[in-house]
Length: 355
Ligand SMILES: [Zn+2]
Image (cartoon, rainbow, N blue to C red; front, side, top):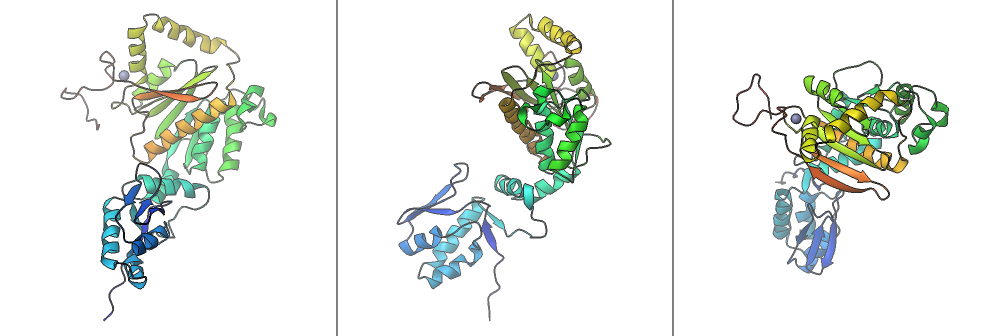
């Protein structure tokens, strides 16, 4: 009688087993999940040292027997790796992400407890993301999202492309004078032929790229519409990415302004002056290329994490990226008691709100 063949079992993508000593190996190098297997017999250590993310772990005990190692001990170690969450079933080749999203899917397979990175990437095709403000930073965000497989990207900015916009590499000299949204549609179609950039739809999340300060009026509209939104504020030599606001759950942009006003009574007047200047200045400041690139990647990553069902790090936080070296500084924020955007726990409220 032959034993049933066990279902193939693999290490999560990118993990491989590295020798540390005659009786010790290490699985992976990322400290978040690297583990050491210690006290191995030499034959077992040699067997493990050849294992990578393509090795069928279910067949490893039989291989151990063939090379004179202890099959039961190898099977026990495989069970431990399963328990530690370092393994996954062999992926279905018909649903495996390929091409530009393959690396992204592999990373999410490593990150998610259920190892379903391919599903995370596939689901993006149904997502709708708005990007408001399409200078180098906004266009970079839109481009990252399109290439990552987001199905529809709503582009909002009809000001013309100017020569400083060419700084970050996405806008071309030939686009100068063309409305930014029109130029962005061309860039996105080139980068990701499957992306929809026409028409509209209800966005799952909107990224708003502004200069000097976030516009409280626009933030209030997004709160009223109950749309998750990520603020990106670009200044001459630094930029603020965050917070990402899930209305009713996270501190909102008004909360942040109320905290700022608590610390600096002059802030409301400054904010109002920035708002008045917004309409007057025909040519807003340009954006430094490396700063735009860093902000775009960080902002897009937050959106993709939200779409994956995770709680992005910038919910209730801002990251300030400063030139010349772009070292990031994170700041956590809390709901301001005077804002009223989040119902305190235990209070009664008008409608159901999941939190
Ligand atoms: Zn608030």
